[in-house]
Length: 510
RNA sequence: GCGGGGGUAGCUCAAUUGGUAGAGCGUCAGCCUUCCAAGCUGAAUGUUGCCGGUUCGAUCCCGGUCACCCGCUCCA
Picture 1 (cartoon, rainbow, N blue to C red):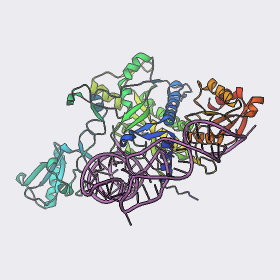
Picture 2 (cartoon, rainbow, N blue to C red):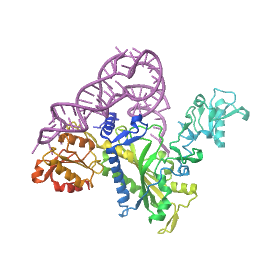
Picture 3 (spheres, rainbow, N blue to C red):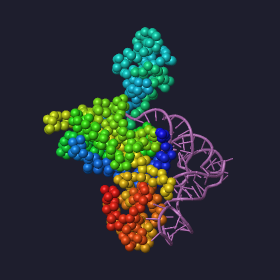
Picture 4 (cartoon, helix red, strand yellow):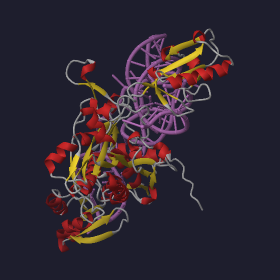
């Protein structure tokens, strides 16, 4: 029997509500009415996000996985600037195609710069069709002319033609215009601004010479420093450079909580290798990255791993061996999936672009091969903000049988609070024992000591915070030294000596 | 960007069809309490999203705006 899964807006609203109630995530500048596409992380959310971030950094940089040859791969860290020389974004392809008003064709799926389009009509005819062409492209123009002549069923001389630019094209005119690569009329959109980058000005004078952009991805900062890292870090190809940081995109429609926001965090790795070895490393990183999500509790049931079809490959991935997505079934995408991470073979696109635009020598000399070349790049690019959202969705577990009605089943590795330390009652010397355990271990683990209110209330709070363990000191502890540890997921309780709490956590958390 | 839906305490909601708002839960304090939001006593918290208009008076009517949710669009 197939289970039919629908977009679950009720669950999503419950998750957003819990995030607000417990201090995971708030709307940014909420007391001023918020700001579309921006979110703030509260105490628990910050801890959760830092834990996901640290897990990635640990597994990629501090303790990278073994490569295909069984030896640990070589990866170093980087933290580049959010604002770079604006020419960076020309080289990367972010400015140009996306800084000017663009016209899309719904039929041919082609996109044109609006100021590069010309329009051809019959002089004196205000109701007949117009035919668009790409200015400066003779074949495109003659094609438009032929289409026009076929439409009016007459041979036209130059004097019969009416040329105009996009500025003369009203909505009504566009509706009867045939695109440069289209057959039907009315498939061109109106010119639309596609500047997805946030613009700012460097220095006090706000003239266009001082214009700069907030980075729309962290990746470029890595390519910019490729030579610096090679020259200073004794790395040899193949190796990787990792970076975690904020990126900014002025999205048309921010939607779905922190899934598509205008300010977000990325965890990106650019792995440089010889072009011949690229397929091998691509394979390796697809495998490595898809398995990683399980180590922070995002399970296979809700993960989808898929390769891009060739027609959806980005400009930088055209010549590579493909792009591979790790997708997660969020409540708002179900039964579909939303992207968590993409592993792309970018060939040597980025380095060659920067070498060309900057006039810099970015080639690497490979001693072993006795060969000078631009390395190819395998890029596993993961969303930290989206990762946090996936972790939240995955952890959210309804359980009518427990007082809170819901608990967050975080993997201990990313849980904001690792354990609660409670005296069963706030008297008889129990708080002193619990407090002493807390003071002893708090430097090593994020713990919460709470002597107030009923024990059930404290357990319920920890359930919503997703704390995996709670240690409770009771009267028996005074005699035997044993206290009780409660497991969040099973509600099971077991006895542990108070001197063994540190060891217990060490076993469970590593 | 277009269309639709609701914005009332931290959360879930009620009320007044024009006369400045309540409950439950949560939170906090004290008491009590031998393991799952228990009990008792008390307390704090709202410019009814924001701005303007009509009115003697607006949370309610009107206009605008902001954020959120849904459907299109968009998402290199």
